[in-house]
Structures are given as C-alpha cells and as structure tokens.
Length: 130
Image (cartoon, rainbow, N blue to C red; front, side, top):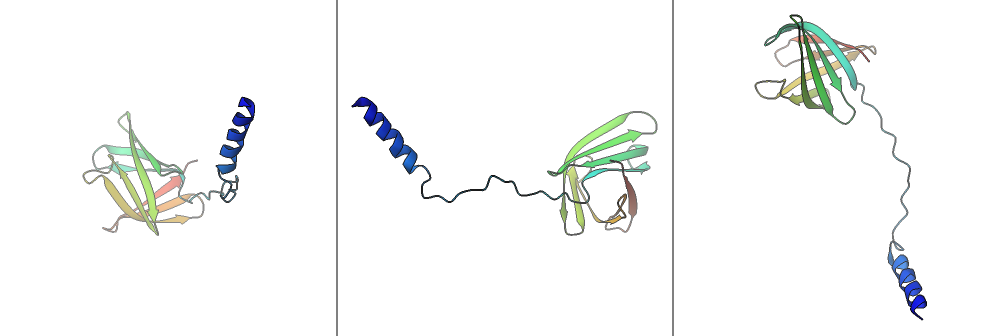
C-alpha cells in the first residue's frame, strides 16, 4: 500500500508539472554578429598619453577592452562597454575621461576600415586586426 501511494504521488506531481504549458524549442535563435564586433587599431597622439597605438576589442555581448601601447614604452588596459544606437557608437568606460563616455558616428569601408567621427567633426580611421 505504501508503494502505491508513493507511485500515485509521483504521478500526480509529474502530471501537474507543465501539462498545460506549451512546448519550448531547444534550438537557440542564431545570433548575428554586428559588423563592428572584433578588434580595431589606430595610431596617433593620445591627449593624455602621447604617441600611442590604441586597440579596441568590441566583444559580442557588449564588453569593451581598450589597450593603449605607448610609444615611450608600457601598455595600459581599460575595461568598458559598447553599444550601437543606429549609426552612433557609444563607448563607456574609464578610458573615456572626463565623462566616462564617448559617442561617434561610424561607418565601415570594405571589411577592414572603420571611420569614427565625433560631434566636433574630427575623424579617425581604425583598421580591423582580427
């Protein structure tokens, strides 16, 4: 008798768990990479650090790593996040002082050159390095 009560309880519990719910597909929706994802590099004169090569790694989930290789020697790394709002690239992190954020319109020439233009009109070309 005790075994039949246990079996009945298991059947009742399993019958109540999701019998009215719709089935869920196990297939993940395909994730389409944004064309800006990847590593981009430029060289020039940084206002704070002088002559440098700057690398931005734009990760798929919005993570950002900025690496500054100083011509005088040494490397600095900054973490942050990135997102795109139509044709505006928004970069947030400690590298983007004093406000902690930078915005630029973006375009991609071919597969390997990104052009960023900030609101004051300055433009900068970045090469894809991955």
